[in-house]
Length: 221
Ligand SMILES: [Zn+2]
Image (cartoon, rainbow, N blue to C red; front, top):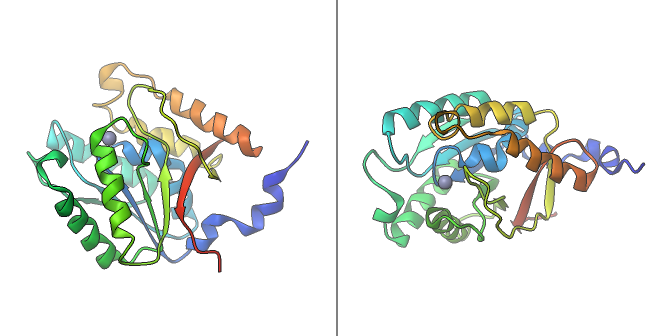
C-alpha cells in the first residue's frame, strides 16, 4: 500500500507556522470547530499562536459565549468575539465587516488566515468569506477556506486542494464540537457525522482522519 504521508512527515505544512500567529475566522461559535477543529489543535501542538475570531453569538449570548470559551480551551486557542450581544452579522454593511477584519489582521499580523469558503448556504458565512478576501490586501498571509459548516448535514460543493492529517487531534475536535451543547446534544443532534467527514477526507490521502482546505493564496518561497 502506498504511504504518501510518511514521505512528507518531516515536512509538515503545520511546521511552517511554528512560533507564528494563525488567525481562524468563523461567523458563529462552532463553525471553526466543525470546519478546522482538528487543524487548529494540530497548529497549537506545532507551537503556533492560534486566534479564533468569532464574528457573532446568535441566540442566548451568555450560553454561547461560555460554550465558545470551553471549545477554544479544549483546542488550546485564544478567542476573540467581534460583535457584542444583541447584534447580528446582517446588521453590518460589507465595508463595516471588512473594517473589523482589517483591524484584526493589522493587530495580529497573521501568517495564515483560515475562513469560510465561497460555497456556503448560510448568508453569514459567505459574508464573512467575502470580507476576509478583502482583508488580503493588507498583508501577504496564506489564505485557506474550510469545508462548509452546518449543524445538520447539507450537501454543498467544495473541492479540497490541501489536506491536513488530523488523526492525532480528531478526538479533540469532536470534544470541542460537543462543547456547543446548545447546538448539538441540546437538539438531539449527533456529532459523529463530523468524524465520518474526516474519515472520508483521510481516505483521500491515506491517513485515518483528515480535514480538507481550499487554497486561496500561498507563498512557496
Ligand atoms: Zn455558522
